[in-house]
Image (cartoon, rainbow, N blue to C red; front, side, top):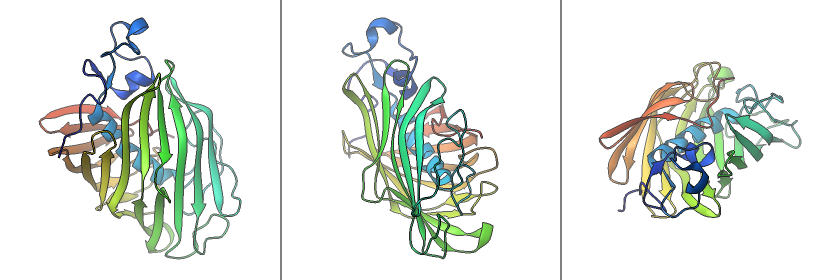
Length: 286
């Protein structure tokens, strides 16, 4: 099986995704964008961003407060907790109307739909689910874009499997979410994630929410290579939309791939024999 290429399109200086989206690490900023061989993407870092997207999506299914019982409306100046509309016909739309993450801005929407016996966007009974359909774009000051869209029929879903109150348990599943980085019409990263077995989530609030087990598969749409990773005791705490400790591990293109979460939006990524720090672009303190 072919490995994930460190340079999907242009074989020269590797820069992380944030470099394409914002300031970059290029020595010649004025001419490097679009010049043959000048821009590539750190694919290991971007694969880690897929995991950050999954963690943020679980929290987002609980609305501005992160509670999985009901989506609360809210409005803030930055993207944390921003843009949740009111519940209409068991659906809440979150609109990113140019809110900011660092030097980048978000536009587009995320649709959240409650199914089964749910009423007024509140889970009613075991078997009900919250389905999430993302369709948003992050744009950096230099014009690079990161697009996150639903690739399957359902997107992502949290299904109530048992328990009551704050002790509810869920299965997280996904039939396809695509993450693509482009600049000046050129695609530098194109990966779709889906679950091959459900990931267990326990707890409805950030205070002690834990996810473990199951398998998340990342498929490189350029090379057809795959990564399979699983969470272990990935745990939230108040004040962050993503988990703040725990780990993910598995195999990526024939080599080991692991992330140790070190704080809100931060982690240590080990791919094969190399390690690096990673900052998850969808994980925010709020």
